[in-house]
Amino acid sequence: MALLATLIALFSLIPLGYVVYMTVVTGWDTVVELVIRPRVGELLLNTVLLILVTVPMCLVLGVGGAWLVERTNLRGHRWWALALAAPLAIPAFVNSYGWASAVPSLAGLGAGTLIATLSYFPLVYIPVAATLGRLDPAIEQSAASLGLGPWTVFFRVILPQLRIAMAGGSLLVALHLLSEYGAFAMIRFDTFTTAIMVQFQSAFSGAAGNMLASVLVLMCMVLLLAEAKVRGNARYSRVGFGAQGLATRLRLSWYQLPAQLALLALIVLSVGVPLYSVARWTIAGGAEIWEPDEFFPALFQSLGYGLGGALVTCVVAFPMAFIAVRHPNWFSRLLELSNYVTSSMPGIVVGLAFVTVAIRLVPGIYQSSYVLLAAYVLLFLPRALVNLRAGLSQAPIELEEAARSLGKSPARAFFRVTLRLTAPAAAGGAALVFLAVVNELTATLLLAPNGTRTLATAFWAKSSEIDYAGAAPYALLMILISIPMTYLLFQQSKKAAGQ
Image (cartoon, rainbow, N blue to C red; front, side, top):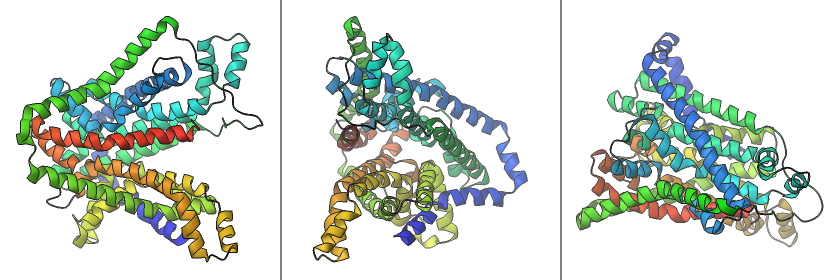
């Protein structure tokens, strides 16, 4: 298991090694010339402004929505709890398609911020809501008994305990902003990812594109370090005897109607607008847009890559999860870190790395399904790894030892006990990887074999030609496939919260 985990960790470092190698090969003088130029400054400004504006807005919407759902007497709070997670079922590039077709004049930083905020605020809402659900309200009640008002309790007591969830959600939002291509390309907003794709298409794997990728990777590393610094080492768990009390929901009184209207407006903007555009273009296109020769191959290839990617990713993640749970030490933590660093890189960097490695070292597998599946594994390995770790933690080695004491061989005890107990968590991880693969666009555009058309790439081909009606069926099916997976993610967060 240790050998397998080590090999997987070394394999996951291919994209980072590619970036370092290309930087060294390019030469310092050329690197400076390509990086220190006005175009890079413009892209850097756009990307930094996008992060500085979008992340705080996602924090406000995510924390505010979670607090209304979990800590107030908001009417229909159970329904709102699920509705606020619903935007994750709509890929960001489909959201952009919906807004661009509804408001064709949308463009630039303002449009990018709007679409990114509406697409990604659930990444903050879900972990914050789960954390609020498991916080012991005793500290809040003590603060209130000392005369502190509701707002003072929120800012001085509740908010500090949400720091880990807020930092993690903010990191996810920022990494998505760095990696997103389709949503910003559709509204003509230039970021590093869109510029790298243009450079790749105009000058195949040119030095300029590689240097832009290096800057993008450096920004990812800065975000990872910033999140670790903000998260800190403080503990917020409750340790002691007795049952956890029930939180007292704050009465909204006459704020009830404004709260309902604010949440309704948020759902209409984030879910209603894209769904309306998809439905409008589906109806306008009529039966002609449902072309079986194009539609069914895209559907079956998406399902095939989704199922294959989910299965391979879970198999690859198992040795690392096993080592991390059964033999926790500095070495196992280092192996895990290598995967998290790679998964934080944008899909376009991973795609460029595999294109370069395949062409130069093993040209026979270039533009094959094997390379595309390998990229999916590296991009989405943590989704399976986190779930498998949780499942293995519920299957301690003592249960295997008990089975062996009853006459079972080590192999049978492992398969009959450990794997059986881990299966539900593995299924959850596989579902999340499946969702990510079906909606992945950038790496698929770079690495898909000739003739491959997934739902995402077929949608992108149609929408790039301003054929909004032709793109509508692919968008609709991606949403329908994503809905149950988003519900599963929401339920998992509630289960983790003990609700």
